[in-house]
Image (cartoon, rainbow, N blue to C red; front, side, top):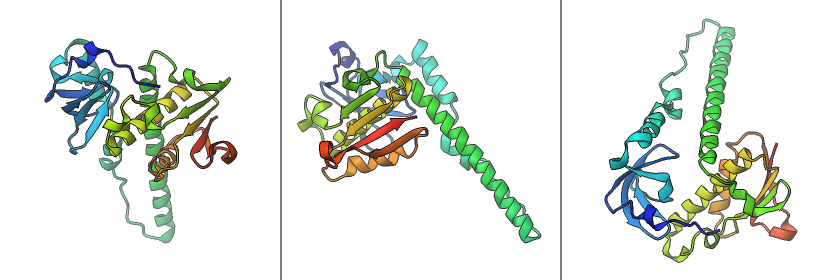
Length: 235
């Protein structure tokens, strides 16, 4: 599927504009504009290809946009929740006391991890709801089953204009969007065709899938896909 971007949306942005991300924290400076993407350099120096509909200029941060930005700032940050509240360790007097103290720390950490996973799931659901349609509808092969080809030529009209890093970021963004829509629309199974190549895209997809609950992951049938696809089942 090609990303379709209306010209009047693209015209909102100019090189050097300061922008914020709508569906995630952060933002940066507009460094390049193509017919498909607005490239935003974040504070780490990376140029991130973004759909212009997911950006808002700092100069436009008023009304609903300002309220949205403020709501993002109110969200608790995942990493500081763990770092700012270290578990107090009481020096044990006996080995039994030390075991109890360690078990207490583990229980506290598990509770924090559960809260962070809940926060992540909530944000993923909000991100999926920002799309008017089910993006997987065009990929359905059977009721409740979809097949998504992540080769970059299927995601943009000019794959040759992108660097390897830019293409990778677009593929991962589309993968995450499909996962969000699968949960939101109660899809039973999605086959992601990642290809072979150097295995970077496959490795990153498998790494991210480990962060999801209530799914099962396995290699897609080799007879049909070779080693270039993975199946995700949603419980």
